[in-house]
Length: 249
Ligand SMILES: NC(=O)c1ccc[n+]([C@@H]2O[C@H](COP(=O)([O-])OP(=O)(O)OC[C@H]3O[C@@H](n4cnc5c(N)ncnc54)[C@H](O)[C@@H]3O)[C@@H](O)[C@H]2O)c1
Image 1 (cartoon, rainbow, N blue to C red):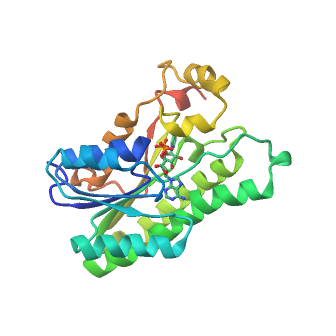
Image 2 (image 1 turned 60 degrees about the vertical axis):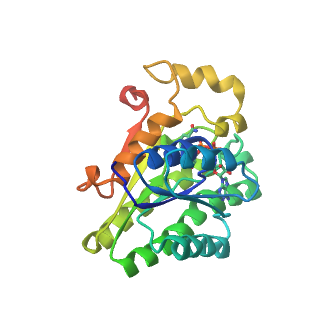
Image 3 (image 1 turned 90 degrees about the vertical axis):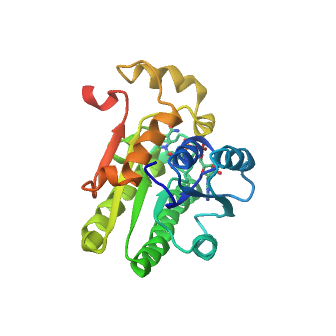
């Protein structure tokens, strides 16, 4: 039980990697808060969490809306008294485009959710951590936080930004019992891929020496490591889960 009685807050926890991480945290004894869009299908995740006889809660959140972020964190703390681990995982992919054709609105929307929204979450999570004497942040970046991802322009920019935020947290709060690390997955089989061109699927598969995409549960294992004391000396760094894709660049 690596997270026994820890209060774990997961944005985008209703689907894909967030859902797998929420269930993995419940298996490790955590109290799990699913923070996701009010329209998300979170009920199934809550059932699977509660199967592990731990407490859980759904809080509606739109990470791109600062008032919504403040309320979700406040509701979590009112209900459970503290916040031990925050997984800033919510994100969207956006559509493929070259930079010279990219619509300004598309840029702004992805940046609002995948970068500014992450800053809002981090800011209010840190305020709570400082009040209570510490906490752990895990940020969802991507392989697109480490290299160019052709066609995913604002996504790549936002995920590089997420890496920068992670390093800043580590540097600024290292003496305050606060750690922050990022996760950088290659393509993972989740509903997020439904937004991307299906004809690229075989290209993604062939892009890794293992000739397969990752599973959400494989990413969840990295989350549990970074969320627990097993990673007590990891700070300001990232775990790459890419089946070897970057090794041959
Ligand atoms: N699937 C991949 O290939 C892959 C690879 C690298 C990184 N990631 C990252 O992992 C994270 C999770 O993605 P996933 O693959 O599980 O996708 P997913 O679509 O299955 O889940 C994303 C979740 O985020 C929620 N969400 C979207 N916009 C939101 C908002 N404004 N406020 C709150 N919640 C919001 C959705 O409702 C959904 O539950 C994302 O940040 C994504 O960029 C995914």
